[in-house]
Length: 372
Image (cartoon, rainbow, N blue to C red; front, side, top):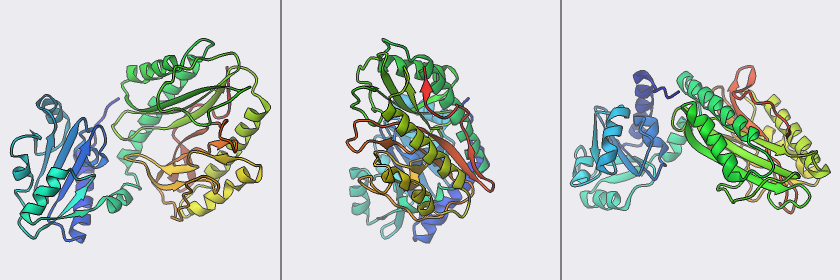
């Protein structure tokens, strides 16, 4: 389940990045990643960042440096680049070899302090290209959409296993192990798996937790989760659901019905040419009925957390993008409706692709409240 992108796809991406750099008067591009973060590195080299990674891209070459000698062999096998080297020794001299004093060089990702100082000493001007590069990643190619389809399939495998593991006495650690074990056995990779357990009679959680808290399921528990697994690094699916161990309380039922209504109406309205503003307006019923949200209403996804990142009008901080949707965008629709005191909230959502005919779901898991 771990396909790699074609050389043609990677060539397309690199040319597009070099076009951005040329438009800014840059002689090349340096990209940076650290601690499993750095989408530009993965996007252009196919190396999923481990500890640290740096690339040098010019019109004629692409080189990759990675932290630690024992990471170099795997990077040589996986990365589609001209060379892979260790971030050690005189790597800064190698990195800046193509550039002269007075040159401008584009950067993607946070620039490490040693690189910034070395550039200053050499008289090289660093120009951030992150905003333009994020915009470039909004529209997915056919290969990228296929990668997201595989990620959605893997995420559904994990979600089904998590739901099946919900039993009285099970902890959030047990649910996490079930989900990760299932999608890992299918050949998929970790992205996120957030879980929360609370009691419907005395709730105290409105969104899933990023880490297990040792909570244990009781006969009146409600479980919420947000799960993303990937077949290709940085191209996961994303699915969010709410599970109840017994008949839902009135509050849970009302929140769930409202969240489902909001989600379905937003998805039904999605098509090329629709603005994010129009989609946000659909969520107005949340505030009309005396509720709010904690998480986003919807956001772009796939090779990063992307625009349009939109919230309900009562969410703090509020995000109200005005951009127009285009064919090929990947968007997670996920209205997390909560009580005003944020003690109770539900999760529902999934990843869709914007097509000419509207929103196409990438997930197959049934929607709605899950009753065990």
